[in-house]
Image (cartoon, rainbow, N blue to C red; front, side):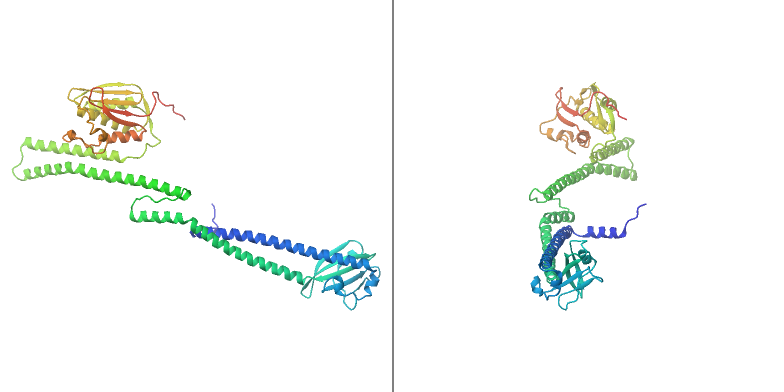
Length: 469
């Protein structure tokens, strides 16, 4: 069981509650501030090291020159002015370890200064020279020692006050420039974020307007960057959504129009039955006729509702469908239509296997056969052939007029000749929907016998597909 760190969780929540522009500004400021701090620290450390090194070299050079000029006894007995050693704040100390106890003395009345184990080691010849920092009365001194003979050392100390003031000023200048750089970086980051995210804000405003007004209007696109591609993808989604919405509205409107007629007729017949029973009654023949009419209207509504449900299924075939032998599906559909149609069927098939929904395929083929049987004269023969995945259904009827041919697969479309016949005008629409969902096509034209012909093609193969385990 993992335990969440409350501090990390709080920081993560705070980070993602901030706007994208503020995050870009903060990231830019932090990045530039870190870079400026590193550069300033490196520059300050370099200058400090170089300055201290230069001071040590100067002190060692002067100490060597002073020690080499005269013997230590002569220098110790003289009053050496500070300016003679190149600085106004210099302390001089002589170390002599040849006598016991060790002798420390300075020119004039000055007290010995800056002598420690390091300087004694130089006097004894254990080291050639030394350089270190000594604090005295709150002031920093740089102390160097050089060997001045056997058992002797010359110690020279100089205050670093001027050097420290120069380094302090340098540090203050770098700090001010660093703060100014961070402020400038923050302003630049804010400006870049504001200008760079302007297309995102426009896209957000457009999306919010669409969500508020429900107007699926495309968003204007400027440029060809990533935001423009995002807007283009959103426009594609809007077009698909608008088309789906239009299809739904059209389906509802057409369904309402088609359902109005059978509902009105059904209500009229039921009212007649009720009124007749309440008065003189109906003869057996009239009652049977009305009941047959009601039963036919109920069947018509049942068919229409089933067609509407089938058309509402516009999703693609799910990947769990099974291989289907189209020949077997065709034989089942022909057997079903034969029982209710007064026509003959000349069926010629060759094996063809497809991957799809057997129920939907049988519904589509049945619709094609029913349509051919409806338009064929009684006793005529409907030609049905299945060759290499293309099912052709041709009747002996009057055929399809050029005016109606482009619309035969439209929902609820019925030609002038078919309006007196039974049907919902959805059968061929279902055929096209099933074909498209299975990756196939359907087309209409003139059949070999001069009547209407329909060609229903599906991708597949003549042998069963191999089943992998």
